[in-house]
Structures are given as structure tokens and as C-alpha cells.
Image 1 (cartoon, rainbow, N blue to C red):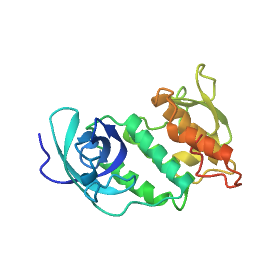
Image 2: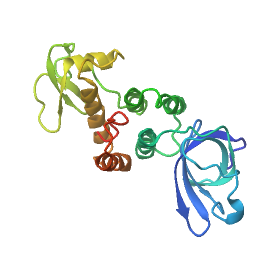
Image 3: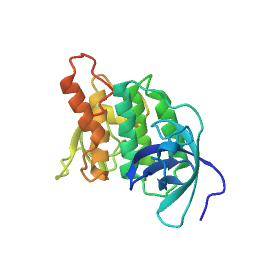
Length: 248
């Protein structure tokens, strides 16, 4: 099977494949995550603008093949790559890792593709806000949307002045549910449910809540971008707290 038209996408990951090729993971608007082989892409004569594989650059691609791993037919740049500072770049790579680990191949998510593009543009202005928004949208798009406004045991509305225990795939509860759970203030849950800014001191709590749920669906897998960010903080003498908790 061959796609007849060039389709918009972004490179999520690439690595050498055999002697002269690349194995590419793309996020495309109409077909979702696609794995494909760019044959001969590492040959000297192929190192030209026809292979625009840098991160955060929009591309147009076509491919062929019936199996899960496709063969690249054509690729061209569809615009300039988004240029990000080092720590902000790590935040964007964290977004890529979430897509790689949580999206199934050939499962279209056109709305999520648009959200991803918007997130790349938002990272320069507000890294923490852009990441929290993307994490929320990703969970919702995959069918893992968070229950934030109701006690999952009683059905009662969450009160801003109470403290709750949050259990993945269930939601908040006043009573400890047993097992793995996270304590969170009702005020944080209410503002997140309403799409409002976090309450004073609530940004870190909001990050912990989203990361707790993501970690559950990742099966506890560690993401490389978080480990790299922690190492960067340890080696840096800068006071700047960095990109909104990539290493949460």
C-alpha cells in the first residue's frame, strides 16, 4: 500500500538502521505514529536538504508498505524547525517520549497533532503551562481523562477546602483507597478541572498529579529526558529552576 499524497508530520525519533539507512518514528496528522525505513539516508550523497530529519521541523512525507514498518518514498521540509533553548528543548523531547511510549502505531489523532504543534510554539513563553496542558490533553485524547470534580466513591462534588487521595483510573476520594495513590488538595483539583491557573503553591502539586497518572499508564517506565534533565541540574550552577518540572 502506498500513500498517494505527501502528509504532514514531525520526526519523533531516528536511529541508524543497517549500513546506510535510518529507522524513523514520525507523528503524522492523518495516520498517527508511523514507523518507517529511510533507505540509503545515511549515504554521503543523501546528506542533503531532501532528508530534513532534525527535531521539531515540520515535514511532508509519503510511504509504502503493508506491514507495520513502512518504506519512505518521499520527504520534504514543510517549514523551519522550531529552535529552542537547551532546557526547553528537553521539555519538547519529553513530549516526544510521551508520544512514542503512549501512542500505538497507525492510530490517528489529528486533534492531538494540532495540540502538539501548538505546544511547540508555546514552550518558549510558558514551559510549565505548556507541558501541563499537553499532558492533560494527551491523557484525555487516549481515553485516560482525569476525574477531577467528583469523589469516585461517593459521587459528591470535590470541595476546594478538603484534602483528597487520588487513585489512577479512579479519581479523588476523601478516604484512603489503599495501594498506590497520591494526596492532593481539593483546590488544586478544582482549578485544574476549571482550566484555571494553579492556586498559590499548587504548580508542583499539579505537576505531581499529572506525572503520577502518566507514570501509571507508562507502566512505571523511566523517560530519558527526565534523567538527562536531572543530570543537567546537578551539573549546572545556574539558579534558574528550568523548564517547568521536566524531571518530575
